[in-house]
Image (cartoon, rainbow, N blue to C red):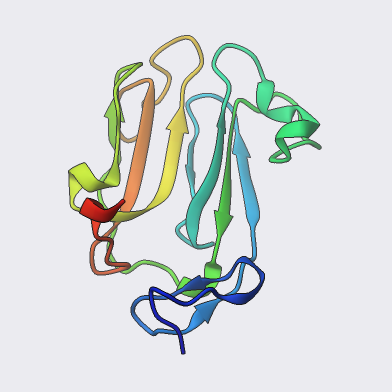
Length: 147
């Protein structure tokens, strides 16, 4: 068992619902600008690359999508043992330069992102230059005042 004061082995995470350490096990989702990338089947978003006008996320130093070409957006998904969230928020889009945070939309962990190129390319679920999707608070409780 674990608690908020426990350090889980090998970069693990303490699941606040089960009080068990969840193993670090990352995977990557990659796409073009305007693609809505989701980790909901593979845990939560723990890393992201957004490139803008060029396919910068293929740079091997970024370590997200080094074997792909024309990748403008990439997310690192991790802790799949947390399970698939039962409830997720709608996608929320923002204009360039605006902050999007799960704390503003009754969410907890980040499970999806969209990034645009030079234009308002995120259009499938909402319209904007970037977008997020969050698991709701019943998935993982986060005390945002302590973050």
